Image 1: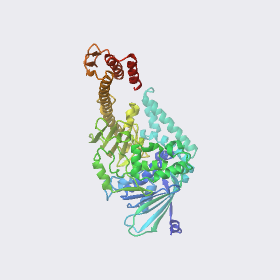
Image 2: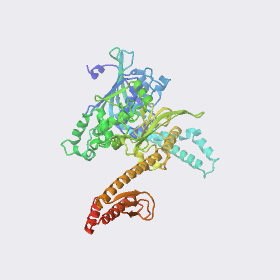
Image 3: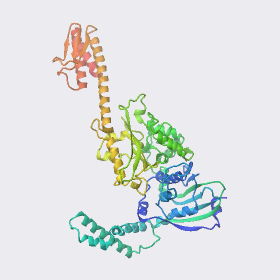
Length: 607
């Protein structure tokens, strides 16, 4: 018996899905700018439910339905109804005062109902089926977001008006604000700001009344029909979320419709079904193979050239609280995050998408640096670990740990350049390639050579935006974390932080290259003297700063490399020495003018 047959004739309730004005504004603006960001919220709910497995089916390659199934502790109908009436509330923390899940002691991630906000960006309809642990019945809820889409513009306007109307509340109302204005200097910023707030609030109140926005039912995402007491299999538990009527824009994106073939590697182009064939071929790779191809940038494969479906998988793996690849995140120091990796192992949480088990894909070093056999710390790469576990008196604690990895070439793929911030093990958006604004304040090409992760265990949550994918940058915790990060980064002044260290490493490499080129030059010059003089002269090379650049003796020719007569440029000085010294050696051996000219031509044409 399918689900529709199970529901036929069963009693049900219809309840509105309610949100506050502030949250509604974010939803209407499209708070989740990627499918991965939306699905991440459902994965977070499963993590909070002590699930050990989340199985996601995308209906590849049609993407007409997305199903998310977990084996967590499930929900009761009453709990779910409360969630629908309290979008964005923190009931999870109330139900678990310790802030940890009961079985695996995982730090609780989400806010009740936030995941449902994400669904409005992906589909028009969703079905939730859940059986709570210890219950022999289950409930099924059918969500319809189409009403919200039809009424979105009016809801947005009402929400804005609501916020403006509430501005005077902190001062005791508009009249109280006007009374305060009488005691303020009209030239001050405080007076001007308060006057503007009064005008906004007054105008909003007027619009509210004129357009009849007092509708108490306006703050809806849509409606939910719940069937509360359905027969279930005794002893089972978990939640299934099925998304249907997938947004056409989402489907088109996942199918790469309208995407230029120029984005894919050249050897995949000019086929009958370019993107379909390319997507199917990439889909045959194992997760480990895909990650390592991107890390090594083999076959010119880059994150931006991946099919959108595989970018979705990559992004979801970055943001989800899953384990690392065995060698990750840093191959050179696989125990770098040992405590964090052990913790993720202890959480016993797996995410499978279309039978592919996702793991965090970060593997460093990468690109050209990873292909070298031997790497030297401080010369080819550098790792800085850091943390914070202190709190000033009377201030909320901020506790975190992390690392920053620098390499002498750009990090590959570009998707792991920058810094990834995790709160309670869930990625807040994707890697911030500005390094919390550092590359904007201190423009430098070296920012692309850095990759890092920060795990926030306590604090910073209040800085989260409603979408849980970005931060409010004026928050004190965010500012403190940013200042710490920027201090570690330093500047491009030698010896100042990671950036300064990268400059030091650059000059070390230049010095070594110069030493190598110098040795090769002496060897070549010695051979030129021997050949030009037919073995009659040998080369003596000196670093002394004699006035004369070289001296021809009976059986040797001495070159004074430090002589001020030579050009200051290393490359020019070497060329001059090869031309003049070899010519002198040839003349000393009795060579003809034609022989000397032939020697000079050979030297020049070999450059």
